[in-house]
Image (cartoon, rainbow, N blue to C red; front, side, top):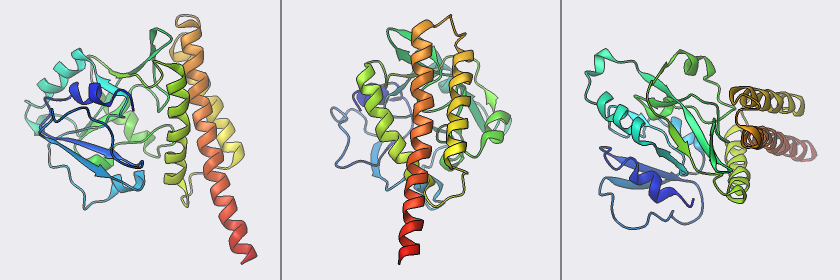
Length: 242
């Protein structure tokens, strides 16, 4: 993650910062500039739903390592945490934009925009295009100011590498669960993601950048579904042989 230090810098005003990492070793933070930060290694995204893990703050904002809270959104979030908890909803959706081919494009490789990213509890937060809490996400109110900036594909090669690693992470999360990740469903969902993102970006308005992001996001969905189905199907064959 090339932009993790910048991501942390954008939320340095937070009461607590937790970096979850699923890879080998530890992520490079670039100095001890964040006294409230702690690192936590996880085996899979399933651990986000573990009730024994609690961050201990009134609000939890979910960011991927290549994302940043842009200035206007930062002001909105700091104002929100000053309000009386009983007078605000349990969760909010936040717009996400990707920096790709030198311009800003609505949405990201990792999910729709706006996305449910701010909640009272960590396990309430969805993860990507295959999330099962779609209805809950639609019900959450939209924060009216600012957006989360995704810099994963600022350099296109980095975006493609990111796509490969995230598809492995998601496929591992869905393994053994009934998400309907058969080949037909994966192809259909991939096509839906492509069309949705293309229309969201106005087809012509964001030109080649919008088309590129739509294509990459659709491929990520297809690859995730294929990997999850392959792992499940391979395990079934091994059991039948045994």
